[in-house]
Image (cartoon, rainbow, N blue to C red; front, side):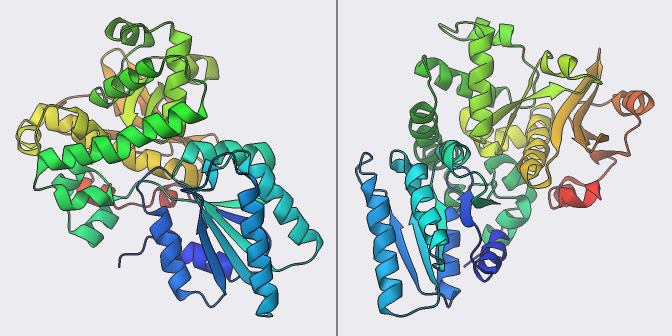
Length: 395
């Protein structure tokens, strides 16, 4: 079975002395539970795996009951260490307070009970961690699957990956696009919006949130002002509401609005957002273009290529702590600007969508990036760039 890079990271951390709760965080359907099960199959630490999936959400005592069971098993078997894994922990109300209480008790009593927690909702995990567990956990981030992973695990070629994206569960359906679209919409998008987003945040207009997501996916790689979004959405309210909802979708690692790169923050945050999906499957599933239609239309395919490059950059931003922007001056633009440690890297994507552009030269003259290069026609091949570890660029 294919193993993601985080397999080695989690296995290594569990072999260390007890210090922090290990939290597996990432969007839906990227293999978090599978990863943990793979590690458990190889660990020599006695363990107990439980899931809150079918537990009543108000039953906060369940966490303490499972914790006490793990303690009892550890004591009866006289093990020097024990591992408790709690899946779908976010489904329990006030879960973070309960975890904090039990963890602190074990710490006080010098009990070598290690803990891993994970859940299908990145938003609910994030909120619980920031509320109660500060200083008590380490994150293992699991982004959407990269091209290199989808190629190795499912033999997807570069064009298939650009269109069908990085959801491992959908790989088996790519020869039946109708079925593939239903899978993406029903098994990924619907739960992510209806369960994660709407149950986590105070969303006064759920229908508007869903419309915004649909609109954002269809406009991936395009700039669209919030005022223009209002004109295309029903009962859209005001730009403040839309901006808040777009931020929530970004936190869910579904869709973001890249801001324009500028020398001051005020100009960045007041710019027209460039919409970008975190996984091109979200763009494709919402489009009315089949794979063959998109691939054989160069101007349209350019949007998929740019979205794939953007998704690749977005999915590594958390790991390497950089920010991603775009840049435009009139008709000249640079598709992506990586900002880190007060430095920047400029990346232009060239494909059939755009034939001429002086953006890189103008941006370099104005902002002096440490690197600037082209991905695509006349530059770094797309299939090569989508295997890059962006951290190597930042050294």
